[in-house]
Image: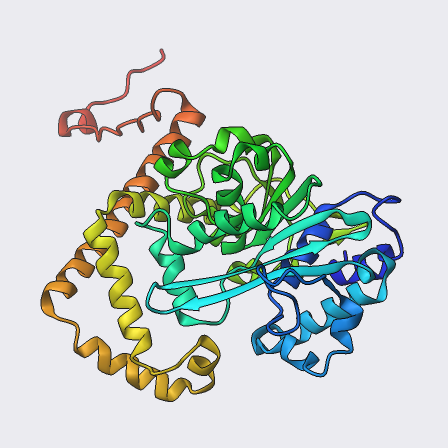
Length: 397
């Protein structure tokens, strides 16, 4: 089995007229949105024509595209693979936005790809290396909308207002959440032009968000794809249909779409999520929904306070200077007040109790499935009394 890189080598020569949009194309475009296009791709308000991958390759600041060193090597290979083929080599990039605001606890980025023939694909970037970006992800547990979600609706309507064609949109991780959120909350005239919405292991929504939004109008257009050990994509996941795909990685590392397996021109499907992962995801979702806003806010704010105590500006610095970071974290933990500690302890106890209760229910359900109403009771073995032990056996004569 191959990956997206093998797909680009084999199918990059085909135009979209020769082979329509595939889920692997969407994966490639979602991942391309992680590149740092600042100063190289026109912004939403500039009114400038789009730029090609070829022009980006020749740009004097080309190396800045791969500034996120966590994925520098695969991002570079993706860029080169898309540039080499006819399928993406001639597409244009435009309407780039990249916003990081610590004051509003938001990280938002999006770009529009104009594919061959003028077919647009609106891509939302997932969580980048900024710490504030991860804080916004946690805020989704109790805030709706978070600033990034509100920005996604505004971006979609402004970008799609600059062209008339039907369009695709998608994103990986938080970007997938933003793609679905913007699609269900944009104007009806924009919803009618949406061809498909791709969420690549993107988290879902609290039940009330789906009920209040216009999800029913776009539900049939949503393609949600999860790896077999998905954690991020299963957060708040109970109302959206999803497909499961195989990955070369294990556990949480499957969140990286570069590890997702590709055969021919499609992702390799799996029968279902791993059972253990599904149970853990169910426990986590049930726990989050059982907590009140004060508890969730306390948890998120404390976690953010502890991480920022490391004085790292982003996760790259945090891991590169891990000794200094850990010392800062330990010092910050000692400063957490007792009331907050008790709230956090109660939250942990609540999670453990939910997990134990669910395991008991699961065990009871397995027994019922095998034996019907209840398990057969073991036969009680009665030891013979003294008089029985001494009583002679009856003769057969």
